[in-house]
Image (cartoon, rainbow, N blue to C red):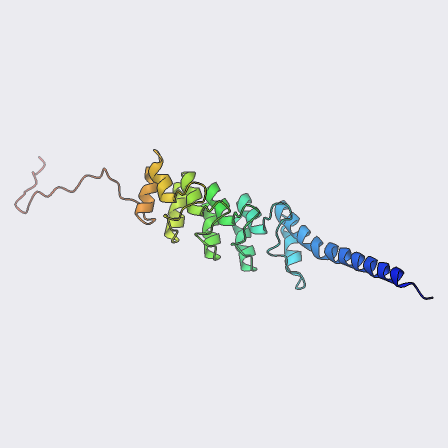
Length: 214
């Protein structure tokens, strides 16, 4: 049986459409299953998916939020899981729909253990979100002293400015009436600032003889 050219064209389009849909369903379902398992804390399912050499889902982004597994795990404060995903090739420098990277989330939460893990996993300490904010700017605005210390020790630049106000982490700390501790850490380069009220040691001279107790 011979079909008219128009019929053949329609059949070809139908086959292409069905094939495309089938491919989308097959290729998309492991990614969705992976992120769902991460969200639910289903380690068995996550490991099962990652063990499949034919799947590359480690840096899958959520269709609605753009978040990866590392974003989700940072929000959940699961440090061990973060290390596992990083070891399996997770990229800590992928931004979500707002440009937020996992280190931005850690900075907002004052989640220092997570920040340490992400930085060791090659997270960009000065990565910017869509507003131009670095993790250090976020930490300074939230007055997270411990996080500022972690980021400064990792080499964060306190003078990079955001897009909305043109302020840097140093600026936010300087202008904040309660930003003294943050500014002190920034000025010290991440070191513990020396107490300003410490009394100097008294020097009585070499001729001083202590008074003997009775």
